[in-house]
Length: 120
Image 1 (tube, rainbow, N blue to C red):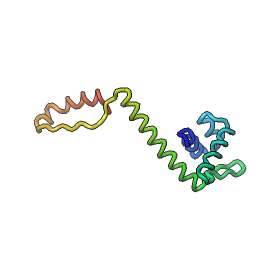
Image 2 (image 1 turned 90 degrees about the vertical axis):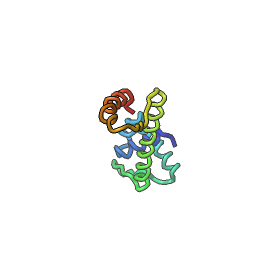
Image 3 (image 1 turned 45 degrees about the vertical axis):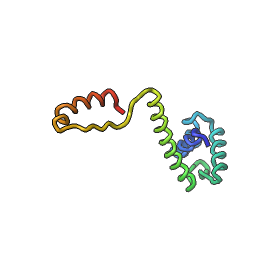
Image 4 (image 1 turned 120 degrees about the horizontal axis):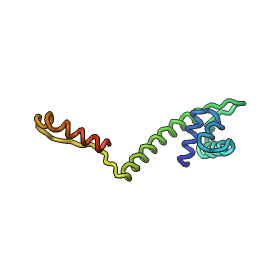
């Protein structure tokens, strides 16, 4: 399964409407329906109840929706992390050992400048 399919199903779970979910993902209603059928075949479960004009999630659909959200959140975090590293952004944690005097007199100004230059 591709990340685009996870995005599509997440949109379906949010909208509970095939056409609107497809539009959000740049797909026609028929392409959306075919993608949903492929997901259901791959998972071996129905993901949506389709009755007249109403759509709702099955239990499997609710579980898959949660998986999609968690996976997409993790994907976005990895992309941001890797993308930031590729752009030369420095991020991490700085640990400093200092005397009480240095902690009060020197570190606040020093750390303010560090935080401004390296927000990550």
